[in-house]
Image 1 (tube, rainbow, N blue to C red):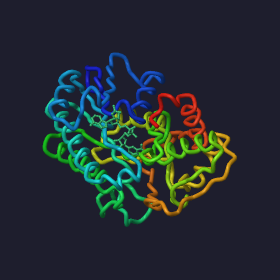
Image 2: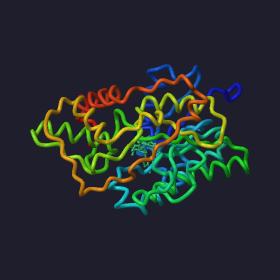
Image 3: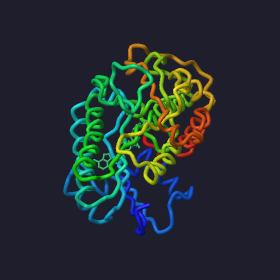
Image 4: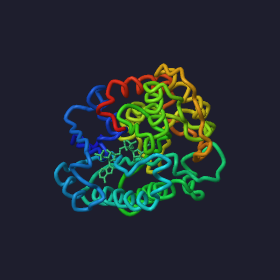
Length: 321
Ligand code: NDP
């Protein structure tokens, strides 16, 4: 693609869960084609909340394509405490990246939305056409509204400037390099860390919430492979959901049991129902993805959990805990 010139791809948020998975696919699975340059950006090199730093880093790398992952991201409980901050930082990061991309002639941007931005009151399964059909869940309204604006901006850049800026919507991502912090991590990674600690200390595993909410989980390397396809092949401005099928949605309790198996935890599991559950479900349809890629094989959850637990145990010293 992109005529004669090989792509120069800038990946914002290159140090995160999804960024590291894309780096793996690019460097270890032959995802980088001849002549291409891939740069994985850390916040140390440019704080994208700041416009001058954003412009400087784009000047430095002169990307033709951008994968925009950088975001102020957290778990349920951190979002509930800090919604305004999530809104403001993410609005700034996204506007800086999209507008700078436009000003510097970037041909394609693929940004990352999230299934937690969907309307709270909705029918299921949710699909790509329903993103703006009502307010998101209160628990993360700041992050969600900022993410929704990416889709609006993408439409604007296409309508006014013919730019091909689009977005993907992954459901719950997990994998190596996730944030395993008890309070601020994503649900699976926080649970892996808690299970690891409970086993080490011989204490019961305390799971926050009832365990009954249902989720679709996608392994970070699957997300990464799909990202490369979107970057190279997907021509729509409208976003596309990256998810396992609706039939693979399962409860937090089911996932906890897989984690206990993977870490060989035999102790008691206690569900603390005084803690919030968040959305009870947010079933997303992957029908659009399946129309494009009917044969894509997702990593089974038990296998992805086992690989992630093994990574966590072997990389405890460098993992974000
Ligand atoms: P991580 O928290 O693992 O990574 C976040 C990334 O954003 C890091 O590389 C971080 O850089 C970077 N970042 C944060 N603030 C700034 C800033 N001010 N300037 C520059 N970079 C910054 O997130 P994930 O990999 O999980 O998420 C990637 C994208 O996917 C996000 O847009 C997220 O909203 C979206 N997403 C994630 C899902 C999930 O379940 N994980 C689900 C759906 C969507 P550094 O570490 O160097 O500070």
